[in-house]
Image 1: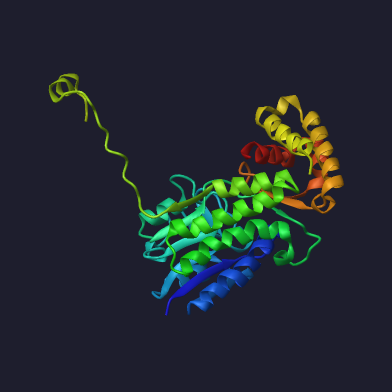
Image 2: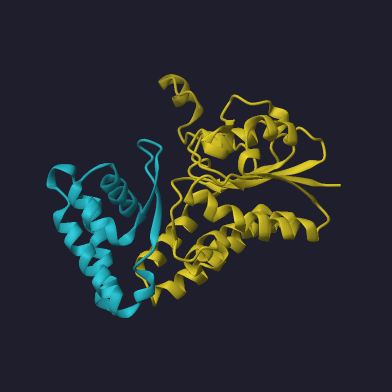
Length: 230
Length: 90
């Protein structure tokens, strides 16, 4: 049976706001497809438990939320769970790595490295992720502002669980970000602009693309004469 | 929301892209105050909310109530820089 490892730290407002969207919507989608959810919530979102869970051969997806940067994805109290070039490749090999985190999808960053190490594909953000939160509404799932952001992101992970391509799954999220941005255009331009920014920085890695082969239009005899490397 | 409110926010973003620490943030703080005042009239529920901002410079995360942004800009510390940095990305 397919398993998904889901990390949901809950130590600050950012993580406490995002984790419920995963434990509800992504976990429900996984259950509906007959997947087992290995939930690493709060104090369980630590490196030792994360690594042990991901090395289970039935795991096909690593998802969840956590603070991140170009090189690291973190769990509870920002404990590093994955660091570029310094993890057991079996953690990611053959799996989707798809999470909500700042900057892990930057060029030459953690997600690109994961795909180079054998991950089936990866979805993330190429730059800093921002969102609005109305903290007067205790439950983040009931906060329309927070829902516009995080409720859009989760569609990427749900799409993959439902068997969609990476492009279609991210496309679902992009469509919802834009729908919400159109609503907020009428109410608050800062929220609308921020939704469009987050949609813009979504990235997918499905293979390590080799650098394009250089082409030189000069005739062969002239290239040889000039020492042209192509 | 009026077109004037929309244009005011675009001005803030545009100014954030040009601003330097030496210039100080007083002018942009005033503009953001004006923007929040306009929002209070058209969409009062959206004013008293926070924005989650990560400062890539120091890795710290800030949860900044919108209404405190003008005061933070005037203080000019790390949080002010993080706000400016966020607007620059829009």
